[in-house]
Image (tube, rainbow, N blue to C red; front, top):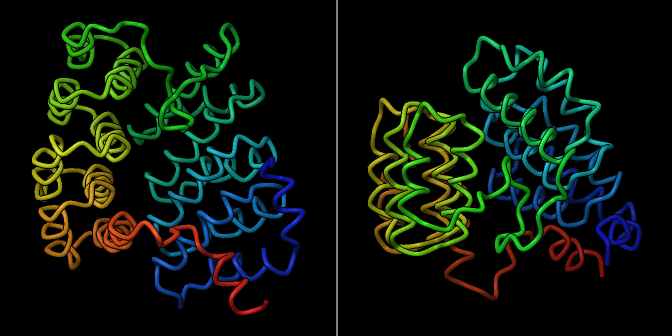
Length: 309
């Protein structure tokens, strides 16, 4: 059933319950995340409206995920709020970056001028994100959206057609190559999925761009390959690493859900960077899901049904 149709069937009362949980700053962050992903799964204008109301929150991590979910929905109705967030200098850089990436994910040419403008933003991560989003939309104008992504995510660049891991590694690590092409190498290696591909991706965690390193952490979370655990732990433990990178590595460790992951996430539950601390909290909650397949992560509607039916 299409997401919008789901929303219509579920009705306003159930969606209001989930949306209220999302916006309630007194609720534990893990509950609010589950509410957010419930809304993403539902989709439609009402879900977008509830998600869009959350950008005044104090948690950069939550706002980052709000923007991410709006991008993954690929619904043009989210363009105005994402455009506003990108342009708001009061928002944290990682939130503005995610808004720019979400605009690219939706892929509509009408935001090209805005993205081109912010491709020169003084915040490097925002500028690089908008450059990538421009390239993605331009690519879409000449190519069809690629299908067959084993992770069903909307990525900031299509995977490269190259299948040779050594050649992809060379592209990945060559910082003279355009960032868009290096991102294409990331997603090609992710889709290959072998240990050799994981080890090549891990080398990318030493590259100069924090945005690039954060994307490596993100795809490691998708792949859930144990060979990435040492690199992820090393990055999380580097206190001089960008919080944007460390947070993504923490979430990836939660997705992988092995004993060494649990230990290091618990160790950094009191990290001095709020976004890292909160990522460890959410990651441990995700880890509980991975270890108990009867537990539904996006369970906002399950809880509402228990209380109201």
